Image (cartoon, rainbow, N blue to C red; front, side):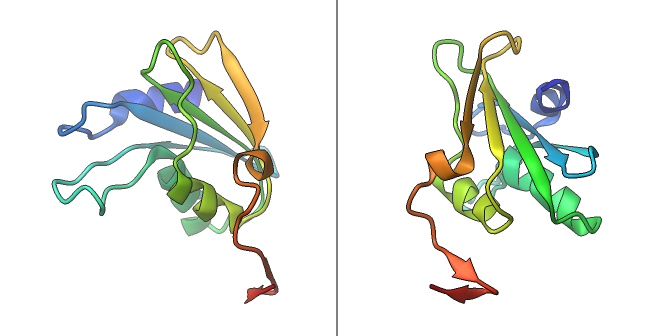
Length: 127
């Protein structure tokens, strides 16, 4: 969670000022951090989760165990958005840890629980 918490501080979110960090645990134990990166066109921005995944994938990692999301909401947990859920599902089910600032309260779920009706493929063919 610390990697995600640090990512939150590296974010670029001048429009919403909504700070989000993520950390991605690869199957071999390597960690990748990510942060949200906004754009004035909004839809071309990148969420912290997709940032972490993209960093890992760009370095040849394709098998993941867990992702942690840290955001600034103090009274509720910030879950991955729908686009991130679908993006992450391309690489299989993972544990998803969601925490509030300070990383003391943690909500644990799985990607399959958060996105029960995701697009499914077998060998990159829709089923």
